[in-house]
Length: 373
Image (cartoon, rainbow, N blue to C red):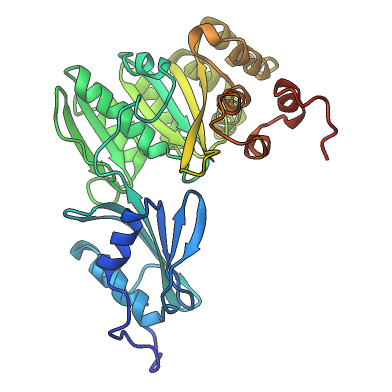
């Protein structure tokens, strides 16, 4: 239950208000707000946590903040669930994704700031080839990367590009809905898992009966969701989704490993047929200390890539095709990082931390073959 026997723990006049906390998150351009019992509120800014100059929160503080955030439809769940995910909006301030969870008998909350409107592909500094990929009529586009790297923002930019450039029916399935899309040239229907549909899988199956041209799936996290997304793409829809994988090769392996061995051949053939691109990204601090920049790996499914995807013994060769595929807009994560370093946008030490091959990066950067421990 989300109730506690703590007679000394009370909400006081000195307790921070929800509006004050969210206002600072937005004004500092922070990505996340952490509300933990026993610690002051903390803001993640440019990837690092910064505690606020406020007293530590007590259990009544966090419980009251959760009540202030919680939608009416979830109030009945307050006594029974161990964690809750939902979206929260404050007029004039912005939209936020909220996760509340139990920890040692108290409520902890993490609030993530969401861009109130979608940004364009160009605004985000993504490769221009991605615009052309979004103009495809069918297939599967996968955006990958670690938590907090901007996958949702990138997908929202893709959806907005389609919404702004052609007359289509777009169905999104999200958990929760973060960026709100208004109809432009397209009709956009946004469905939330747990509110409008029971699961990603169920949402995809249902969407196929709703005459969609484009389906955005918030995350492909299990076999049945991946399979439903592949089928949707195979039947003539453009599907955009995300996975928590670091790069294109890990993404391909994760998809294949999600299925039992007897289905591998079929899944390989399906992926080789419907895949349009894998966009893998991460955020790295700028050298001038002014925020972070997005680093993007891009794999485009050319004929050469398709041939390798269906052959288990040769799939790893896809990385070589990507490294040599500049004509198609392709680049590996190391190539992308090297470009950012050479342009002066990121520092050498940060670049070295994120590349897959530090030795090759040092050579490309002109440092020489220095031994890497």
